[in-house]
Length: 208
Image 1 (cartoon, rainbow, N blue to C red):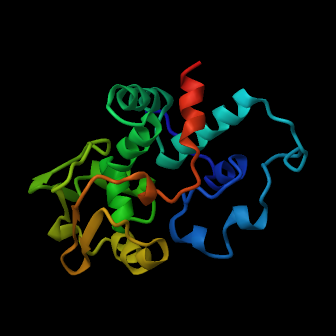
Image 2: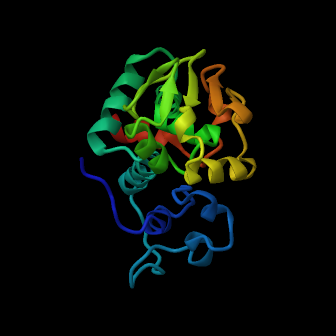
């Protein structure tokens, strides 16, 4: 599967905002976006007038890259969000938030969504008592995620639990750090998603 393998900090600079792709580094003074808050490249500082379409496209790209999803997958999520009852933009963000890899990241078991995907594929986590290896699984209220006992001393997991206080735990999740266990208490609402996202721009883009 095609994945972006270059410097992740360039993505944040391109999208003109923190996407929190580098874990705890994003909360320190080492953050590349904090040091150079302009687009990469020799013309990065130039002021550019953007069309409405360009603004909508950049917003879609920002969200897609934040969650680490390919173009076709993201479009499928939009189609599903549009099919559901309620506000399409909110439905889209809820589907993205309820992905297994995102929930693991939000629970503080990894420093980034990319780390969560890698560990899920290696069978590090158990969902409702069963080993899972599919990062895109959609979770629902009542689902429980546990780190397998033999994997609890993985440095990435131990480090992530030490810095979860920097990110904060969403109200719709519950975590028992001592037992490496987390539970989805409820479906997230729009107020639970604090990232600077204008989902209405994405809806406008796909509605053309």
